[in-house]
Length: 366
Image (cartoon, rainbow, N blue to C red):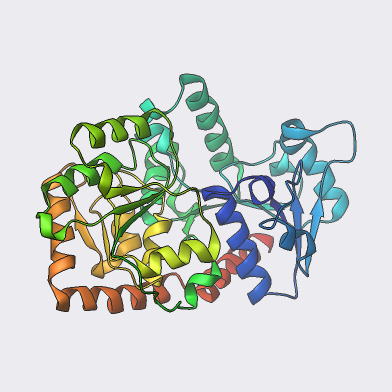
């Protein structure tokens, strides 16, 4: 089968949507090397992250060749190129579909990651919300299948976009393959870990307030891996005003094995987000053998499973209570480590996810 992908994020985005695109191609090419994977992108930002996909066996990178370039080509020129190339199935990996695909004879699927611009509208400009909503609605209306990365996202798509439930599949987000190979722990001073963008939805301030409530003998530094704008400065001001600067470490962004090492050696991973389409860092922590405190809302109970401690993200007291439990109850801590990893290995198994995706492609191709 010749399968086309919207690979813009794969080659130009190095966080959430880009990671999803790359791991999707990884698991498909590993499990189904007999198929052809055509990666359509308006440009390629070539570096150590993207170079393997330019050279990957079974993949072919396609960029615009005519006068139409950039987003215009991606929206309006891509269908003609795919018809020329004999693409049988197209997968829009990041919430969008090119215009005109519905009438092209090419079967189509689109992955919807979240509808955060609707659930947290204050984080988005009015103009952006309108554009996102138009793109999501068009994709949901015209794709043969809608793939949601969690049951939570599926509920949101059904609520906001009025599509028939039988058209929607749930395939969890793949995780970087390195996390399925455990890493040995290092001898390091104890620390806790947060990984993710620093914005109001992710609730870093809730963690700070929970740490403020912790018994002093249990306090240890929090490693904050991520970046942000005004909300990050708000959090830093609160930390400074309460004399807690010594409890926070702000490294530059880290990737791949360096990030896996941070998960592996952390005493605790804390992620009390108010809303997530999936919650990838929670799964990465579980696979790394790191006990997790996360939220009891949105998709986080799916990502964390039965062994993550789930707290009310609106309650620093509850977040603190769950952190203290995992730091003081050795039996619970060991159960969380072993049970959490087993849950993540089963639920987010890359071979299972690849087979689910290929099953969708084969269904819509017929």
